[in-house]
Length: 479
Image (tube, rainbow, N blue to C red; front, side):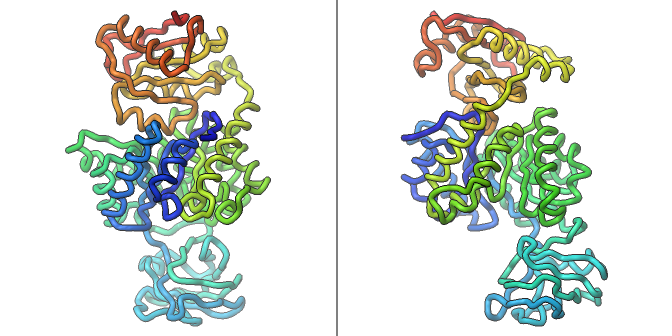
């Protein structure tokens, strides 16, 4: 199986094009690290079955992957039309009616989001269908929003609504999301992605619900905040600190803040995530043309490469792998782009370290391993880790030496699948330090990671198996 070696991880969305067991196995073998289950589609049982499919395909491929449950969030959408769609003409009037129950027509349509009349006023601009249709609000009368079509086009059933500049008050977590969190915990999803969070409280509530639902399985997932609302930008740092990572969700975000603002925001978000020891996923239209074409455009290649150079942990595929014609080829092409971009990265550990203040022993051990391995030209950096924290801290710095995280916890191994430049491996760990170090070297040599004579750096904690307790760095030459 052709697979480029790349430090940046690939998130692939599961859908009709990738739900065949053999296809999914080949995608995982070709470089998929995280499989996204989109809870905007399908029933609870559908997702349970898909999670089982992922675990089985992963086992056959010999590569553990993480499962990310992506919550739907509030349905800020128009209702349905009698003919399925209408063609809106610029200059005409169009009514959005929260009380309308009959199908829509050229004059107006109902709303899935009943709170819209309270969120807008005359002069506001509404963007429908990812900004392709623009409506100007003339007035709000009771439960109806009267608008003039500024930019017309085809509007079909259940298309999304955004308010330019943000300001829609729909809660991030709906009743459906709360049930979906329970479903996700029933198969121990490794990450839960929360749609449209506006502040830290949204993420804290989602985490609490997930922890409660996962308690019977002794499971706590990582929480990913999808940054797609204008209101989230001023509160980005508080949202980040309440999460394990963020997703740069460029679709809805671009509609609310404008396309031109997104590239700079993407760079800022990834930089902020890395500085705070959090994860970053870059998403939306990364390889969009490969839904129907066997090769990407040059602009898409540059987009993926730039996200890699920005330092993103992962790049995400949506419709490309869910419904596209070339899901496997898309994964392979994305892997090649990531690998090529990483080769162009410039490692500046001295400058990177000088901007950091470290007060914890375990973090200083992680940084010491990076610096020493870099100076010695080590073959590998190895972390014996129960929680994955040491590997995460190491990964926040650019280095061209692979980081191998050996853990006795399957849940930790799967969660580390999303961390850039970390290769998580499962290994039973002895309580005796010297035995554990010998086991680690045997494990590395068996997998061909190091050979006799190779230098590698390894970290662990004493007493062994205590989370967050890394306090030892050893430089080894494989025997």
